[in-house]
Image 1 (cartoon, helix red, strand yellow):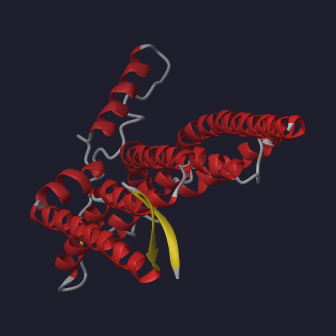
Image 2: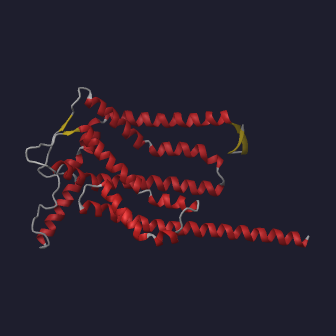
Image 3: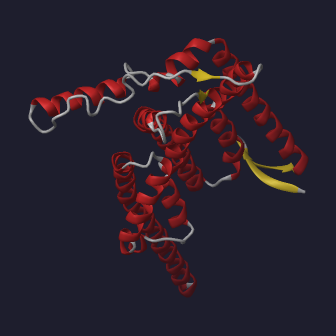
Length: 299
């Protein structure tokens, strides 16, 4: 089985086994990047756990301090009566526990692996892009390259949004909530890290909405008219999604829903651009076809 594959010298044919060999080296290089970043993350244990993962639970975390300062400002201008009303994770220090003998070293390895995957993400995307790029036409390669870059930026923006805004609110709500004063929260480190990563990953995925709209419009599943028509339904769905990935309080849900609503409007704009581009390509194709027909009639 031979497939056409563009190289620097033009098009050449590669067998199925040659394709597998090419893919194998891209996968090997990707694994090298992942393992290298994993080792680096494993060595910087204090940075990984104390500075990054456990930081959102501390009162001096930047988001917690900004919320507290904002609460004091509202009290000074007479809008709020309780100056400490927005001071989250203050005086609510808790101890993370590990209930297995090998729990901490296992957690260290798993977290280092996840950090390696995240840090190597741009390099892994570049490797797979280098593998698929020769098989694409020029216009397809341009669209795909822009989509890869945009999806990467949107994903990391969503992760940072989840880490700096949603994670502190989630930690504050879940660690301070009590069904009874007689029940004390002792948080397992696996549970804490799982909640933190779930929130960040979920926001990273939902921030991919414009990219999803781009590809769905490309294949003709949705149109900007469809998105405008069902905008009210989309608002309801967005608030449901916001309720799922945030603590059950209105403030957190609204905090997530607002950027998602903005992204939905951006998605409509992107969808309209895709439709205009497809119309121009169709008009250009029809004009070229008419030109060929006229030349044939003249002959």
